[in-house]
Image (tube, rainbow, N blue to C red; front, side, top):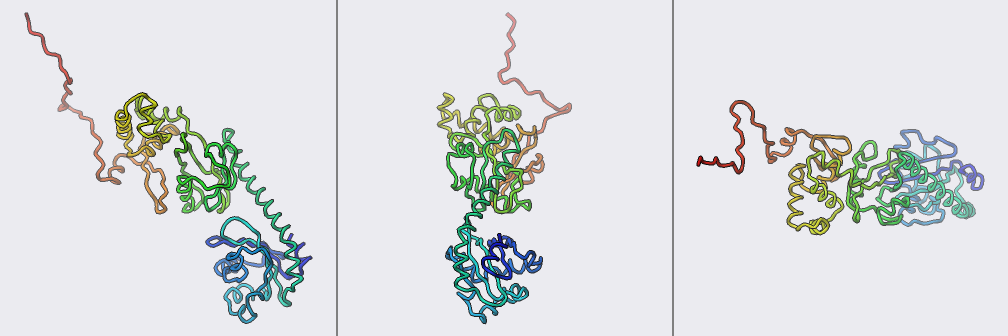
Length: 377
């Protein structure tokens, strides 16, 4: 495509560029490899000195502009980006057009010349080409998004609900099953709980969050995890599934919860308050609250979110150690398994686990209501 553009608007170098703050620029040029590793790093730090990039970022304009529309040759030569990037390449004149895309960055095509400036006819020709560039970009973007979603769907035969998220937390694409679970249609913003969880990926060197999130949405308990497919830094693929009651009951029973406590926890996991739990089970609100207190005490947690996570971890892998959620610097939460001693070191106020009495000094616990010996008649 760049070769075709160069045939219609003569230039020495043509390039496709994606520029975003805080991310390495993407530059594809014809002829290729115009920027070595050092020059690319310099361009990344100085890209926003380019008046054309700054203009498109501020205005979102859809017409072609040149260096000479903003700066004289003398003013251009004073810029660091000219001295360190353009001058070594012999570039003196540039004509560019931008492609509309979500986000705060700038995507466009830049044409560069070493001698004569671009004419008004050159600008008009690039403006005529812009709709075709926009259509090509949109089509390629849709194909790329479809690829990542299909890759996520292929991970597991049971996977049906998949979301494609951009860096700003917007759902770009969603399968019908995912839209049904979230009760929303793309494009739209992620639920707040998912946005907070996904922020953990920004601090992960691998660019993805390996800890799944269990959250209540509507009257359902859902689990979110990032797809094993490696998307780029600007896209995230999330798989949504329903947490089944049988899964909760399996983990709850393994942790010693009673049948009634399992029922209470299942309803609590769906977000139901104590009043609704009581109404569903035909018990008083006070009894429902007491059941929750007993559940928290048995699982050694302080709220229903941690209780659900505790039960699901045990259901998934049979773990017998206590998961403790701790906040990292971003406010996101991750699960860590600690033994009893480590738990007490992390929380000095934590009560000590009662130790069994053994040895010859052990005293048998008397019955609560001992039978009285009957006197002889």
